[in-house]
Amino acid sequence: MKLLIFTQVIDQDDLVLGFFHEWVRELAKHFEKVSVVCLKEGRHSLPANVSVYSLGKEKNSLRLTRAFRVLYYSCKLRHEYDAVFVHMNQEYVLLAGWLWKRLGKKIYLWRNHYAGNKLTDRAASVCDKIFCTSKFSYTAKFPKTVLMPVGVDTKLYCRLSDIPRDPRAILFYARMAPSKNPEVLLEALAILSQKQIDFSADFYGSPQPSDKAYADSLLVKVKDMGLEKKVRFLPGQPHREGPKIFNSYALFVNTSRSGMYDKTILEAAACESIVIAASKDFAEIAPKECIFAESDAGDLAKKLDALLHMPLLEQQGLASQMHNIAESQSLEKLGQRLFAEMNA
Image (cartoon, rainbow, N blue to C red; front, side):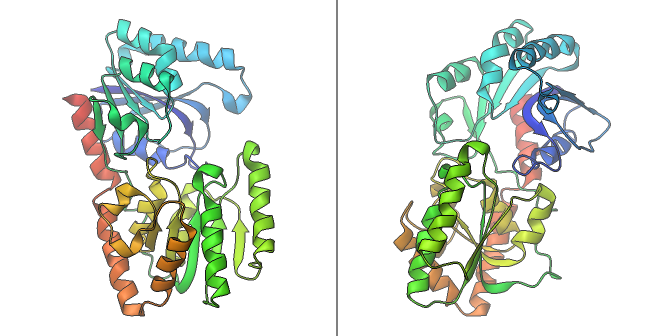
């Protein structure tokens, strides 16, 4: 079976979507041929049965030009794929779904987000199947939706014993965006600071240009809360740097609302950081001491307080549970499931 993939970025160095490079590598193990059409192309190193085509955003191509190229590659490569897999961007389905149908191709959409609209519904109606990881994703409501493993590369993300880990170090690792709710963690840290609890916290992540003002407001909050000596903000890092970063922190906090099921939750778990999250999906497989009420800084502070005062041996036991959770959501399992569902 041959597969055509539409995605945003193929770039090992991309701060947000660098992981998808490894998804393509994994899918290439199962499919005879994989053709990838990306919005923007960067550095990549993929197997011989993978071809990459760009819509030209890295060269500042016009949106109309990019739209034409979607249709162009769909036609030009029509003998080189049996099915289309669209990652995240429903716009490709809305633009070219009619053409893929006319060419007799199966259409699969990966979309995992709590938000959606009538355009999402329209795109879903064209697809043969929809994939997501969260039962609380907008797309989970469709009868044709199939729940999937998160897809964590547990060979890359694992415990690195040569990296020392501070048992009082807290990590936040995400884009600095309102949807990621970093201010909830800041408010929780302010509560811990008022109780004179010892900790340090690093926030890794860069904002999109549209979120720059929001990111700047977080820096102001840190000063207003008197957390300058305990909290640092650091820029986002390439995907390959993730394991080193996660391995340096005993605690990882994810404050995103349910329906997104951020991959970083499982990446941190694979590195045996203790994950504290509000995700209802994660709550189904994680110990209760690792779950806090969504957007509730007070509850998050209580959970962090308990974990920071947990004896080291208990912390290590909880960290081992995290690793087992991540293994159940591995990239290898995702590749097998995607191939089975598309080949059914």
